[in-house]
Length: 116
Length: 113
Image 1 (cartoon, rainbow over the protein chains, first blue to last red):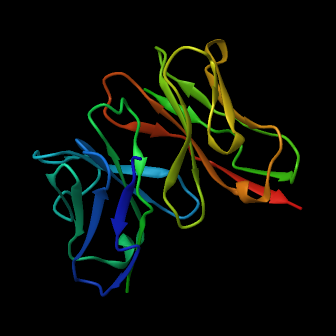
Image 2 (image 1 turned 45 degrees about the horizontal axis):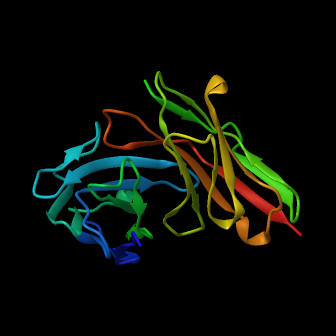
Image 3 (image 1 turned 90 degrees about the horizontal axis):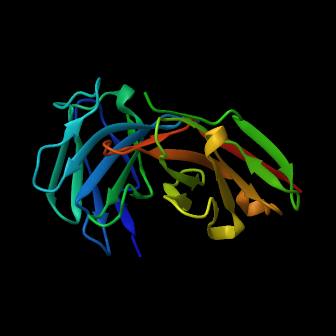
């Protein structure tokens, strides 16, 4: 149980375009979803937290207009990187937590974004 | 402020040898403690967690961890390492009042034949 999927697993886009990453909880209702960014050989950096039906809460230093997060349903959250630049290239990981999963997060497999 | 320290950036062990990965945290109350494992290019998989009760917790893949309040530690152990255990290991802490987890910087485990 507690499976989280992400799509796509890899994406290459041109500078200036936008790309959307989906995060789905497959077998539970995710009341809270988290988006992380991970640089090579580094830990996870929390970007934002979203609760279903509410606006996302962004961490300090994360541009909310560049990284649009939508958590429209209890099983789906999306991260849209707008006007992507090469410095946005990274590994993006989502995680999800249900209402009864006390502090425990289940992670998706990640999305490798490369901006050329 | 809460912090999680994994003092070992990289550890190399021989297959079959025992393993201990260190994790220390800084938080005033008892935190909720987790160990996750990440294989290259993959997301994180939960190995084990501690919320309360018995301070020695068993996880998947033969891992265990012990919460020591006096040392603010939650070290991960495995008696006999397998080559497939080579990965990045993250310790994480959840605290009351905070929605997210705080992650350590990770320890990369290399297993040699």
